[in-house]
Image 1 (cartoon, protein in one colour):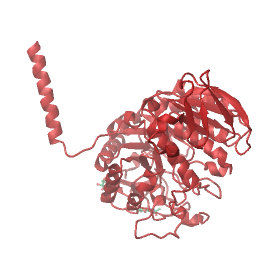
Image 2: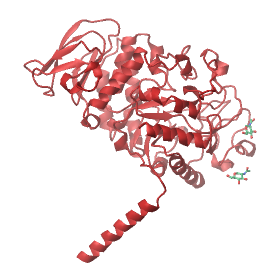
Image 3: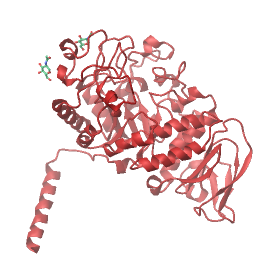
Image 4: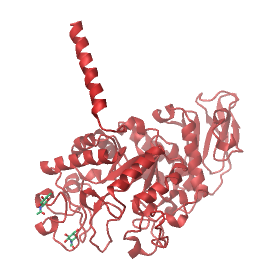
Length: 512
Ligand SMILES: *[C@@H]1O[C@H](CO)[C@@H](O)[C@H](O)[C@H]1NC(C)=O
Ligand SMILES: *[C@@H]1O[C@H](CO)[C@@H](O)[C@H](O)[C@H]1NC(C)=O
């Protein structure tokens, strides 16, 4: 008995050893656990940076030129490599890049697939962005700077072909590898987003440009997509996948798909319903935090909205999701009206940004937030997908430094910051304050109207009497914990991020 156990173990050790010796050079597949402490910069390859030495700064520099911005603007993988320090200095340590696969090049009345959501061949890399080798170089260059790379992937649909009848031989022959009519669902446009069958079986897009909906019940399509995602993540050494239009495919499709990917997965389920979005977390690691996003937009752009709604969504999310601490939190995205277009009030903007950067979850900063982009004239797609080069990649704008400052604090806190749940410290109609590890975060929706309020926030025993907390967003504001372990603060409308002064020594935050 003893002997056989021993030999089994020995055999196992040998097998493990052999595996390591014979496996080609590979890096670790990143798990949800490892992603917890990361912060993500969301970029659109075509719009982030043009190839060094081949810049055409005029192209897409006028955001009102709709015909122009509906086509390629010249961003490339080598452009991203050249600007990785812009992301690194913002304090972010992961990027989510727009889809990399080859797109339909046919011009439609709404442009071409520069955004990446209109695939033609899922095994080829979009030549507008560079070669497969360039993409590998990008991932390598990012890893060398300890920046992880999450790739955006689409399994729900392919690109549109205007004026051709969908699901005909003539239509489907343009795609690879899905070039048979049976690879697609019988054509219909989604008409009712409350009907899950309609959402899964019909096409998104418009009557002129429906996006052909893959038949993800067809075993040939299923196995092809699983093989593809397994190939894609390993071939390019990606650390994570962001799954587009996840609610448009039956949930159990994602079990095998995400397992095949071998990396952390975060799905887009566009809904403000906590229970609905949360149900997908049983089929992938995480989702975008749409329920929280929806509330924070409402609360922080509208001084008349009531902060108790924030408590509600946080509680609802905690009850519904398996784990809220790995949800992707955001203030802006390529699919939503930019925050800075909804309100011009920078104080409100900073409050919302503070919440996103420090609330439970993985913060996602969409390109342009750091440059106060507004997405004018509409704030929405396609205008919220501005080229970044007109900003000259300035690293001195107040918002850029604001984000970098908070991210620097995220590097100082102890690891329990990423595994603990925030504790509500104060709530009223206008204020929401919370404690996470030894950080006290105070946000409000007064905006530019300074309410001049004195508040005593309960310290929950987190800091001892006499401890000095510094507001890292306004370094000369220091608060001493009083004899009842409370935190006396003056509310002026700006967010506050308070942290023990002595623990900031050596961090360079506030010159300490
Ligand atoms: C779209 O482009 C593909 C080749 O990429 C071509 O086969 C197809 O005929 C084009 N469709 C239309 C509607 O022009
Ligand atoms: C469909 O694609 C396969 C390869 O994926 C190819 O062998 C076949 O010839 C294509 N069929 C048509 C009709 O283009």
